[in-house]
Image 1: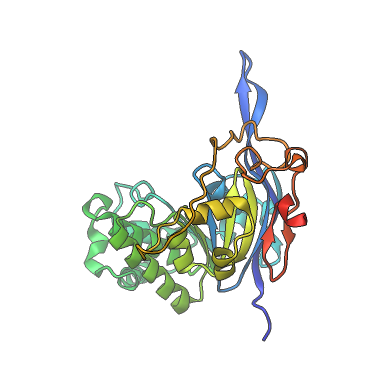
Image 2: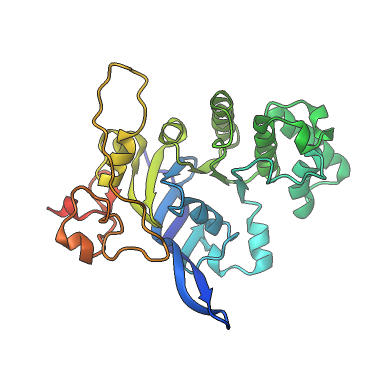
Length: 325
């Protein structure tokens, strides 16, 4: 059986934001939001990206769509480097790649009905006439579990879960191949989260979709992902198949994250790994391994040399000097 083809390939992606100061607003530093991240996404799979707030996972997702312009690196989608595309070519490419945003209320125009919001991508890309777009909107509302008459309502008339369904319908409107979901359930109640996750799984099977699913909740990511990447302070520290990563984490940061996940069995005992200190500032990251200031297994080499992101067997990638021992 041949492996699924690569749909998206991200190589050495960096996104730095300048820090300006003084009377003339000169550049005095930079925030390294994403610092040398590489991964691939196979056709039809869901790649989960997890990490603490501020680790750069959302910036990574937005950089793929060039909502944030990458500082350097390459983003290859179906063999074409997105970073080299002109504005018009990139606009057309966004028909193939869509995004579902974290806040379903902020991502919808309060002056537009749900129907107009869903129809907007169709208008932008010149798909169908007015009647065809109207029929498509009704179809999409039904697909995401809403009634066609909901298209006449405004965002404030929906619950959070319903608004996120509208956001998903809008992303589906142009029949994309890849959807980047940026914390799509973090603003929802737990009971609604499961409904939206199940909807996304059903849609993936129905429309042959590929997802990059960004979240900070490890239990949510385990439910929906095929592979999981763990980010810390702008870098990818571990990447593996879902079960392999959750059962055999290699990086100390991943081990600490997983030790904090609640277990449904009250009798089960799990050793909690408490990390000392705070996450360093991305404006002044530590030298060497960025995790060394909090790592319980820190060695001298960790303070000086940044570890390489390597395959340690079975496509289980990690960046840690401990694994070289």
